[in-house]
Amino acid sequence: MKARDVVVVDGIRTAFGKAGEKGFFWNTRADDMAVRVIRELMRRNPKVKPEMVEENVWGATTQEGDQGLTLGRTSALLAGLADSCSGFSVDRMCAGGLTAVTTAASEVALGACDIAIAGGVEHMGHHPMGATASPNPRFLTDKLVSEDALVMGKTAENLHDLFPEITKEMADEYSLHCQLKTAKGYEDGKIQKMIVPMTVYTKEGWIVADRDQQPRPTTMEGLAGLKTPFRVQGNVTPGNASGLNDGASGVLLMSAEKAAELGIKPVMRLKGYAYAGVKPEIMGYGPIPATKKALKNTGLSIDDIGLIELNEAFAVQAIIFMKEFGLKFPTDERLNRLGGAIAFGHPLAASGPRLVIHLLNQFAERPDVRYGMTSMCVGLGQGATAIWENISH
Image 1 (cartoon, one colour):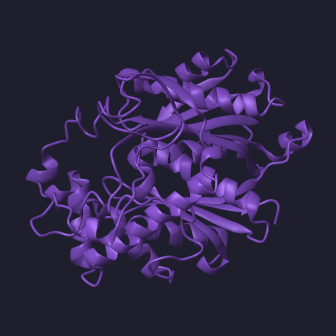
Image 2 (cartoon, rainbow, N blue to C red):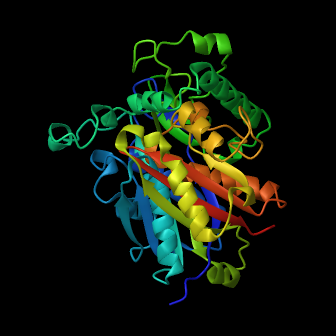
Image 3 (cartoon, rainbow, N blue to C red):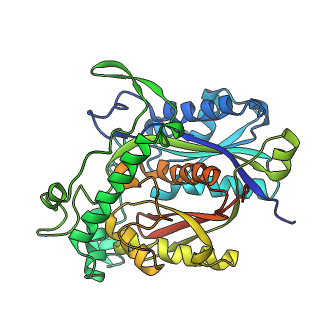
C-alpha cells in the first residue's frame, strides 16, 4: 500500500497557565481544556462536519483523574464529535502530544481514516510529573540508569558537564533572547491568534485565560542572581529552564485527497518523522539523534530546513542542538522565532502540538521557506523530530 500525503489544516491551543494554585487553570479540568481545543478546531473549519472526524488521539503524561479514562475517546464525546469517532491516549512524556500527531498522521497515511484530530494536554497542577509513578527499584539497584535520570534538572546539569564550554552565562543569554522574542511576538499580535480564549473560575472569580502566564520581563542581571536548585553552584536555574504548566494544544489532520475534496487549502504536509533514544541521564541530548534520523529518512540536510521549532526544556539542551547543527548563537533566524518553552512554559504533552502550531503559522507567513522542523527532548532519554513541507512554497 502506498502511503498517502497527510496535511495539517489548522491548529490551536489554550493559553499556558502556571501549575498550582496560582495558575488560572487550577480549578479547571484537563479534559475540559482538550474539549475547548477540539471545539475551536471544529468552529474554525466549518467544512469539516463532526461526523467526518474518524479518530481523536491525545497525549497525556499522567493518565489518571481528569487526564484518564482514555482521554482521546472521552474528549471526543464531550466535544460533540460523532459517536462513530474512535479515540485513544498515548504517553511519551514530553513528546506525548507530538506522538499523538505522528500516530494519527500514520493512520491517515495508511488509509485507516481520512480526518483526525490530535493533540496533547497536561495539568501539572493536578498531576505533578511522576507523583504517582512507582519506578522499578532495579533501575537503581542494578545500575541500569543514574539516579539523575528521574530528575530532569539534574539531567540538564549533566549536559553542562558533558559540554563545559556551555556556561551558565550562555544559558542565561539564550534564555533572555527567548523571553525577548516572545514579548515581541505578543507585541506584534502573532501569538494571540494561536490561542483560544477560555473562561475559567479562579480565586478572583471568573476570568478569561487568553494569554500565557509564564513569560516575564528578564535581564541578564536578574537571571544571574537566581538559585541553582539541582546542584550547589550549578548552572540550571528557573530562568534558563522551562516552567511547570497547564495547557492543551491540538491540530486538525487529513489526507491531501480529502482536503481537495472538501475544498480546503492545507498549510503543510508531513514529510517524515523519527524518534530516538539516548541515556536517560542526558535526556536533553535526544533531539540530536532524532533529527539526524529524520533527516536521513527524508533525504534532507539541516541546510534544507528553513524554520525550526525546538522545545526548550532547558537552555543548555537548545544550545547543544545549535552547536551540533551549526546554528548561530545566541539567536538564529531559523530557530524559535517567537520564543520557546523557557518563555511559554512546558505543559509536557501539550508542547509538541504547540511546536506544530507555531510552525504552521510561520509557514503561512513565509512562502519562501519550503521545509520546517519540530523537535524536542523527552524524559527518560528520548528525542522526537518531525519534518514538514510548506504547501504554499
